[in-house]
Image (tube, rainbow, N blue to C red; front, side, top):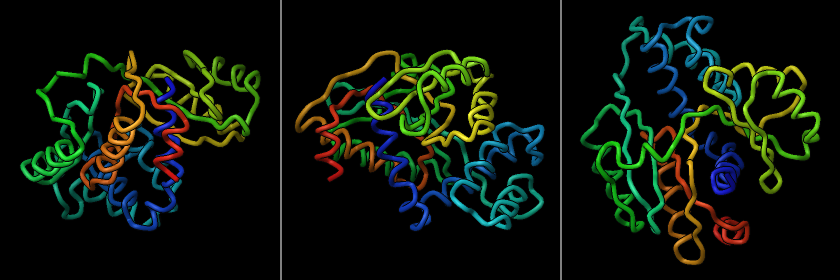
Length: 249
């Protein structure tokens, strides 16, 4: 699962910078509102909202901002109505890309995202064109410096995880969607810091990229992630550490 983990390592390393720019706040506020709208404003009975609140606290979002976003979602305060949309497409080398979007203007979103794909030698496809290449899983990254493999295995398998794998300097933990929250809570109870965690679309196979194609794909992924309407991007690529260091450095 190397490409997946390495990209998300890049993403979360830049999270603090994004938060300062307001990027993460914008995305999390939208998720708070939409999750509250979809299943109510009580986090005890709404797992999606519970996750959004945890994400908001991770980036030190003020409690008042969290509360307002939830109240806008439940209709107790006036707010913007965001639509949940999925776009599927391809990057260079035939890499499959699955994009989750929350937008208040579907026509604007598709126009802007099509432009991002096209200028980076990709294209948006029809609905369902790549979804079959991904499987919904709980996905957690822990840096190897934070815990030993044996310790992690004991904790996550007891909590219901399906698998643990090494990838460079990280451990990747995979769960069913139903057991995701239990595994996250078990790690936190053992004071193990998470580099990243989410309900993810995990690729079932990977496309190896090098050189110019690798750089183009990384640029496309970053531009998609930076778009205000985009919540998550998943792709089935594998790129060497050296290529990523060249892109990041």
